[in-house]
Length: 77
Image (spheres, rainbow, N blue to C red):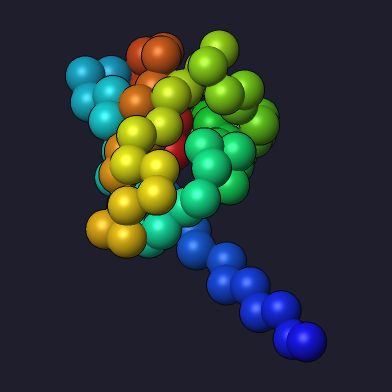
């Protein structure tokens, strides 16, 4: 049996007002996504925690859904 995986990556630049960021592929559980917050000025990245820093919609949908940030995203990507 062969198992194939495909990594998908989306990068958005935060502006402090947009809190929903779309993804366009199927995920089976909300933990299938990893969300990182990068500070543009320093390049430092931090792994975000589901339900603390963000929520996920569209689980099980072939068209994807949204990651909704719980924090101000200005100056981040």
